[in-house]
Image (tube, rainbow, N blue to C red; front, side, top):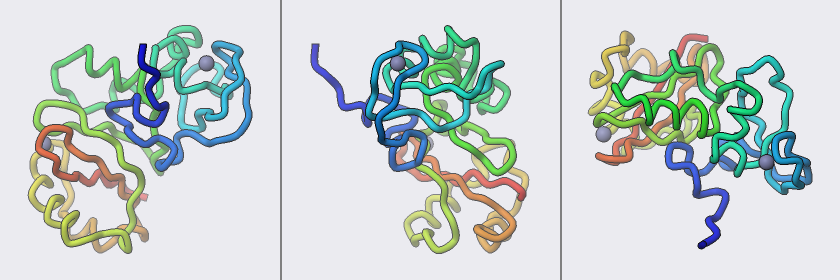
Length: 176
Ligand SMILES: [Zn+2]
Ligand SMILES: [Zn+2]
C-alpha cells in the first residue's frame, strides 16, 4: 500500500501543520502509544481532553472512539444531510480553535476544507471576490460582509475555508 504523506490525508483539513492543528516534535501518541514526529494540538472535546494524538489515530477514527470525544462538535457543523460526512468532520478530521464557537461550514452540498485563520492584512482581491460571491450562500450568515471585513483582526476573528467543489474561498467570522 502506498504510504501517504501525513499532511495530505485529511480532505477537509489539507494542511494541518500550516493551520497549527499539528505541531512537529517528538511525542508519544496517547492512543497507539507509538512515537510520532507530528502531534495534534487542536481541540478535542472529551472527558479527558489533555491528550496527544498522532495523525493516523485521528484519521482512522480510533482516537475519537477510544477516548469518546470529537474534534468538532456535531452541532457546530453546517447541516448538509449527510451523516457520514459529518462523522468525518467530527471524529476523523483535526479541528480548529475559534475565539468563541468554531463552526465547520459547507458549500456546494459538502463540507469545505479549512485553510486557517485570516486577518484583514491577509485579504487579497481574489479572496474578497470569493467572499462576496459566497457570503449569502449560507443561511446562518446574519452579518453584513463589509462590516465583518472592516473589523477582521479587531472585533472579529476570520476563518478561511475553501469549497472542494467550486473552489471558492469562504469566510467564517464570529464576534469577539
Ligand atoms: Zn497514534
Ligand atoms: Zn462551492
